[in-house]
Amino acid sequence: MNLDDDTTAEDLPAELMPVLTLDEAHQLLPRLAAVRDGGEPDRESAGYLLSNLAARVPSHE
Image (cartoon, rainbow, N blue to C red):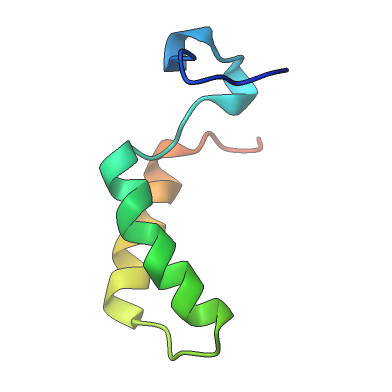
């Protein structure tokens, strides 16, 4: 599948639907990069992001 600049959430199959808004994704990227680079994770921020993601992702069951 080729995702170009004109692709919208409505165009994506269910397995590729965004879980985060664009703003949330921009907030998450530097936190992930800091952990990747060996930085200490911000537990408060990680807890907030984890609880929001968990609430949006369907269960495996």
